[in-house]
Amino acid sequence: LVCLIPQSRAQSIYKKISPACIEILVGGRLDGSGVIVCPTGLVLTACHVIRKPSKRLEAFSPKVGRKALQLIATNRGSDMALLKLPGGNAPYPALALAKQIPPAGKPVFLLGSPIFRHHLLIRGSIARKTQTYSWYNGGFTNTIPISAIGAPGSSGGPWVNQKGEIIGLQVATVTTSKGHQGVSSAVPLPSIRRFISEKRNVSVSSIQAAVEELWAQPTQLIRKMPSDAKGLLLRQVAKDGVADKAGLRNEDLILKANGKNYTRIEPFIRMMRSMKPGTTLKLEVSSVTGENRRGLSLKTASLD
Image 1: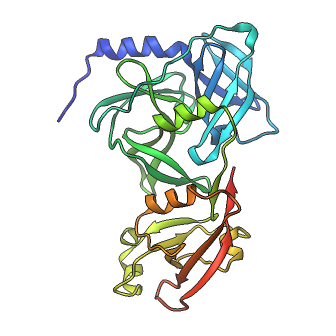
Image 2: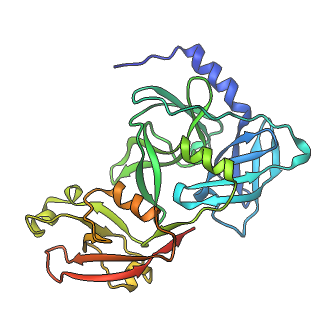
């Protein structure tokens, strides 16, 4: 199914959303994009864009000019940050949130400043409406996949529907050693709505390691596993993190967590997110070959 958008519609969307879209300067350098979500000057961007607390934060756009930003709250688990423009210049142009995420296949638009190209409108389409989790910058982020390439610099820019309403926030692009793979990751609308409403720091549990599904592994590694292996594979175990200190290693198998077997990433991370940081997590693990099967416990770290 090919969905064609008239050029006039795209131009209308650009004209509507552009005044509320800004560039985020960190220590004077253009590090990402952002969007004003309230006339009082509340700004939403990706948390990884501003994770240099010693550097000054500024907003820049033709409409707003160059102004200092105050950090209000962060949410690493959803890779979002809220900032505030000076109140004396309100009201600011702002974008509204959509009522819902469009269904798969529907066109959406991203406005950002990828690779230092200012205020570019990028077309995409919803690849899947349901949430998944993307691993980058040392943690899992809840996202929806969008068929489009969001190059570096567009992180923190808004994905909007055909009415110019926010349906997601650009945070990552799927890449391999061969480059971009045509899929972007965006923070979904429900997470955005809750964060803007609560305006507070959010911490989630982490084992400071990634997990991958067994069927996603190279054939050579799958051949090493027991034929009846069911679980998740550990990757990117952070040195001196809670998983490392508990004796877990890259390519260990997590066979059970709190007594339950998990074979997909989403249910495992949802279980983790239901636990407060510092909660004890009981694991049953083994080596990738099924040897050295053992039980252990660790206290989850905070992803913040």
